[in-house]
Image 1 (cartoon, rainbow, N blue to C red):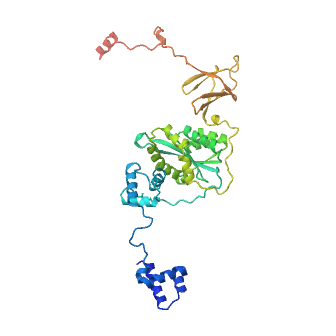
Image 2 (image 1 turned 60 degrees about the horizontal axis):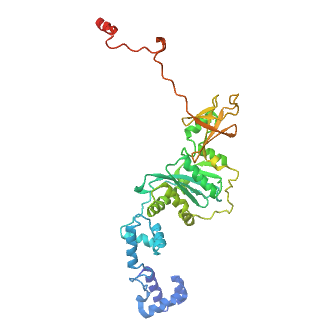
Image 3 (image 1 turned 90 degrees about the horizontal axis):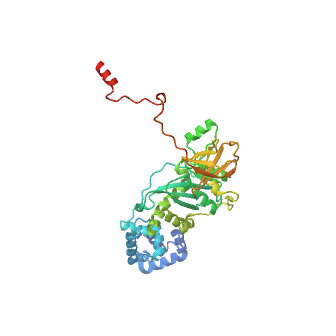
Length: 414
């Protein structure tokens, strides 16, 4: 008998001897009067055995049948090896029609030696920060370097954006955590939801300048922005720099979700290229399913996203640099020489600065005095080789030969 059942035995024995009323016994045992009456009836008919739970030592009503348990184990060993209990339970229900609670799956896998829970590390104390109140008020961005294709491909980077208020997320797989990858993901977010108010990132040089560059720019009295920061400023997005991974913990935890679920999804789909992986992320229901499962309602209904109308997003999300024109309307960019269509053939350029934009689709555009200009690549003139028929004073004298009389004279003196 359990402790609760032994307590019932003592109290009901007092009721049987007339020392306590049934209503008082119900209050002592903290059960209803009717339930206490049923226990008293079983106690009178069967004695102490009537107070023991009827299913004790027998099969539970909700116990998973042995054949189902065997099927679950075989599926895990065959196709879903390495899946966590929660994700494995979802796949069992979605593709095999086996609806089992993830805790039951976890206990079964542990019993079979197929799963072992990770030991949590002891972390230092971090102050809790409340979620932002509005959707679009602050969006976190980060890159996660991981073997997303396991042994089928090389290591690459998943760019992730997640809204702080709701947990709605969006992702894009790229070769590296580059300026172009960050621009493409933010562009994709703006097209779907609008322009967010703040962007919370880490201190990588893709997003913000380093502390050393920032101090140098401050001392020189000039503005220092990354290419990504310049794009955000044009859209009115303020970048907030996180000083630790824990500060942007929402996107860091989201990276862990992707490293668990996306890797397995790409394995099941047989995907081993970045293009195919982005089709899974954007074209399928993967991100939408994560948003449905893990996102929450914002505390306030107002959406802080702003429309991107009036912005040429292709001209915003590009690599932008300046070059100086020469008097013959030429400039050098990326080790190539370009000829600008001159505004006037009779005068040299008034303003020497040309703005150059390299779009994300690799197209090149040039702007002079606020207007786009035509240009063409030209072949730089080759340097003429040094002439050998120049007078003695204009070329370096050649050293004397080994059998020259001057050399034999010097040897004799020694």
